[in-house]
Length: 159
Image (cartoon, rainbow, N blue to C red; front, top):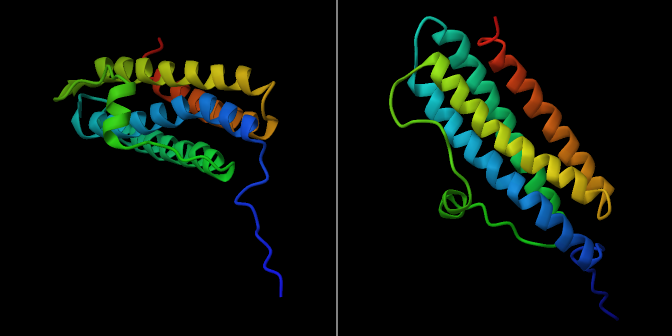
């Protein structure tokens, strides 16, 4: 009896590498946003506490889901993803402070972090247009969720 070997993936190695190049910064940014979003969630203070506290939980969940989707796409194409805490810390930054923070300041800081991830996600959308449309669709969905969460937070600052 002949044994048949099934490849781990049918993806072209060039497509896999290109996808990983564009989606890895998105994964790392989203993971950082999830951690720093929780930091903000625990330390927000002021009259809008409960609304901001709950919105930050939604942001954290959406960031974790987006990171999972993008990371799983890279792995499905046959490449590993390195999203360990040390890697995230080395490749991202945050505007979110360590301690108690008034809600207005905290929203601006979280939005600054979100804007960095949105920029990386837009770069992925642009780059993946020539590499892998399925991966581009994932990046588009991530950007839509980020922009919605940003809108909800920004609405608290708008007059």
